[in-house]
Every structure is written in structure tokens, then in C-alpha cells.
Length: 136
Image (cartoon, rainbow, N blue to C red; front, side, top):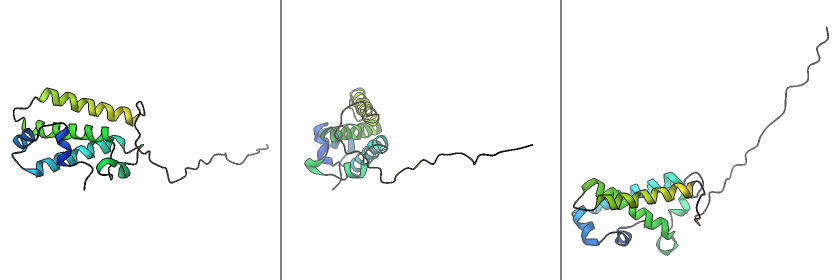
């Protein structure tokens, strides 16, 4: 099971509207959900453990991340088809999701996402060349 599924989209779009947009083609839904996850990973990968975050399913997932992921996926679907949907509203929701991801990326807003643990220790080597004594 993936981090986001078609059933999650019902929180941000009516099922009838989703069927109208996709014409019953679930591969479009899967592609939009996968693209949404990759978009979110791109923002969060530097500071957060994206494998752990996006590896969770069900109620273990971060609720706001699921919601914004669905908003992004629906925007991708509507932008592709524009099947009578209100694109401006969806664009606003997409922008809000991306803005939140940027704030989380910069640690400007609270999120209880698991931070990445640095495994390799960084060593700084400092010093100078041996002292030279020149006599003339």
C-alpha cells in the first residue's frame, strides 16, 4: 500500500468529479498521486527522513501531509484535463500546499515529521604548514 491512495482523494474532491476528470482511468489517478509524493519528497528530503515519512500507511501518516498531497494530486489531474473544474480554486490550494512545504523545509513552521539522522560524522581538519625558518 502506498502513502496516498485513491480513497484519500475523497477528502478534497467528490468521487463523481474525480470520475468525470479521469473518465474512470485509475492510471491517471495513480500517476497524479505518485507525482504528488515526489513533489513533496523534493521539498523535504534535505532535512527529513522521507523514506520513513512516506513509507507509512493508514492512521500512522501525517494528516496534513496527506491532505496537501491530495491537493497537489488533484491540481495535477485538473490542470491536465480541466473538465469543467474550478482551476483557480485548485491552483490556490496547490499554492498553499507548496508554501507549507517550503515553510517546513526551512523549519519556519511546526511539523512533527521525523527529521533525518545524519549517520556519517563530519570531521574538520585544520592546521598549517610546518614553520619555516629562513636564515640568510
